[in-house]
Image (cartoon, rainbow, N blue to C red; front, side):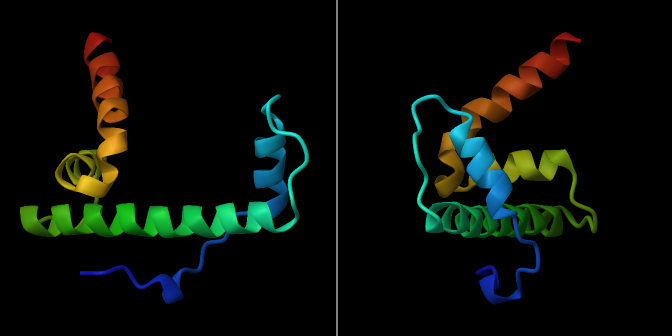
Length: 97
């Protein structure tokens, strides 16, 4: 099931993205269109992650998405492989508490 990117209602403020980008010392000037493109890419990324999490919840027969569903979506979806280590570190830290 592909996410419907045309239906995305959440938008990230370009000014805040630009401020975050410029907080890095290595980044100099930022073109005006760059924060807008990064914001749109973030919207697509989050829509994909939520859609994968919804699918995990549906497979489990649950109507509410939990952090566990997001974790399972990250672990079971190839395009989220770059987040697997981050999720496992977060869970390791929670288990130590």
